Length: 191
Image (tube, rainbow, N blue to C red; front, side):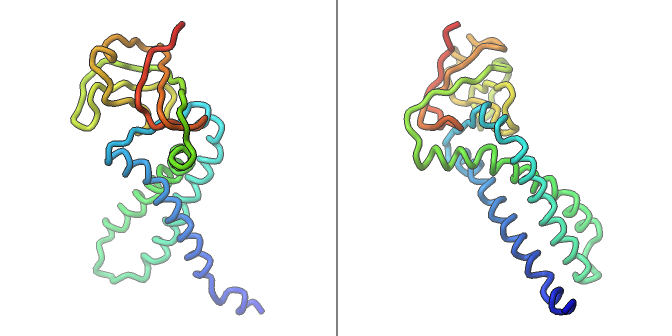
């Protein structure tokens, strides 16, 4: 009976790895859209509402691929570099955690807004509006209390950016929902 119970222990681990891989791909979806030129921002309310779920999914996606890799590491050819394995075993959980959290924080609202979005407006608070622009983000405006890589507005006019001060509220409009918006324009909120 015990032998039958543990006959396929790797089957369950493979299934968990498959789920983790799908979550990682979904988590990378907004990054690919950003490279294609679409700018999407999840709302601060959404980020606060799902923070514990996002952390849990991030931990799951960090742990499962690391366990799968560590179990397979011992079956590799002895000539493989120990440094390579150690680097991957340290790097994989960080990558998994960030893409797992991103799948809940950003990809969920991203897919929702892309499928059933409507004209909407959401509010964001400016953290910093001065500084340099790079070729990936012209006239960068940093936003307060937003997740890494989703904390900036790009491509707005330079004179608009220069008129902003930290703490000001922006109203961003575009196609979206309560959870996030594909940005088409921004204006300063009336105080």
